[in-house]
Image (cartoon, rainbow, N blue to C red):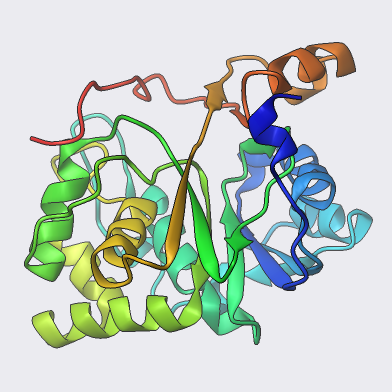
Length: 273
């Protein structure tokens, strides 16, 4: 492992984990769950898989000792309430998954919960709390629309010099509650309706839960975070096709691998408009 990997210590703070998923994620989801148990250096409470009703995902949860949660229990809205249709495709489910992540605090009694995408596996040890500070894994590029939506929601420009979109993030429920309160106070409606309304429906990627929460923490709790490079590798193969030796070699350079099936997901240089 590299020097940065060797600096990862264990934490005694217990966290829960939330993974939003749908059936198309079944090829990666078992590996995501295994990587959490192997690479997250916190005591793990519940691993919750939030999904539409699915016997296949429920069966996987039983095999992996995870908690299946019907997404209808998490928010009082469904995909049909969002109406996010671009010229190319319907993005309502994509936005709903982000709202489910932000609503995840309602599913846990713990202060902290980790959210991870169902197509991303961790290949190095991760710790998310160091000396009372949240560790954010960051990258150097993002999408301008994320920042435009942040300004519409909160009235200020984001100030972080790096992007918080790393496909996984630890949420502190007290900070997240303050973010939601500020959005609701500004827009006089529930936080999820405000996000739905202010997201540009002409954009294929109009909102980021990770970019919004990370920039809010940076702005309001500047001494409460530590930034580390995400070192995420986008991969077009499947986790089942990778050998242990290949994973070991990747871990010399990367912290995580994302098995994106989205052709649009290409790097855009720069962080701002």
